[in-house]
Length: 220
Image 1: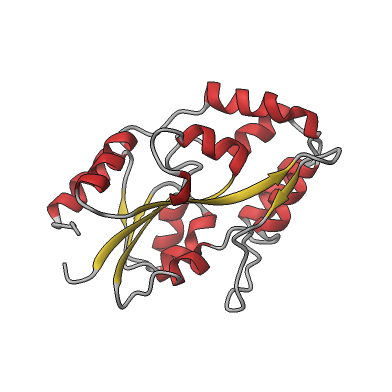
Image 2 (image 1 turned 180 degrees about the vertical axis):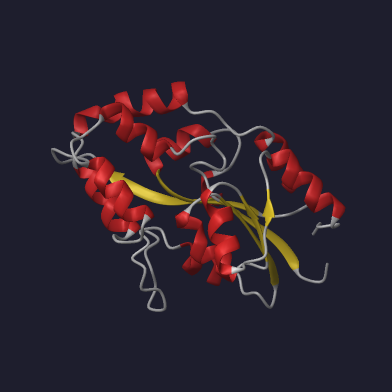
């Protein structure tokens, strides 16, 4: 391959089997969160607005309870540790690009992915309720109010030099999938790729992705 392959992998619902933000909301169940979730999925409300508002319903005092809940209940998707080793062994940079929040993303990935290779949202527990921080917000070319703007991150790795591979499952991955050179999709993202005629490879486990990349000879 003439261009450097590079991997951009979603976290919630992709690296993990379920969406941790949704799991947190179901567990702690602040009134009105489900309507906000539906608005985000239907693209009636921006991701940044929806996620920020949902977490603002939760007390900052719940931080340790939330982290404990995620670490006890979240499960890595089958083959993810092997996928990390595959990328390392083949010299393929792997970045986690997550609309999730640092206080649960970093503990889940500790020992697997360096924090320097993780793009995610931040958090502030100094007030009465949880405030989400947005260190990777949209640039001037994106009007989606993403919160964490995956297209803006992809733009840091120009397509003239990189073969950009996006792996994801949800509406938060759609804008990045539109820009990618190659897409691995599951769940909701498959439906959107089919609807918009975006070329993609469906997957269930990371073993599927390893096998596909090996068959295509995708190495650095």
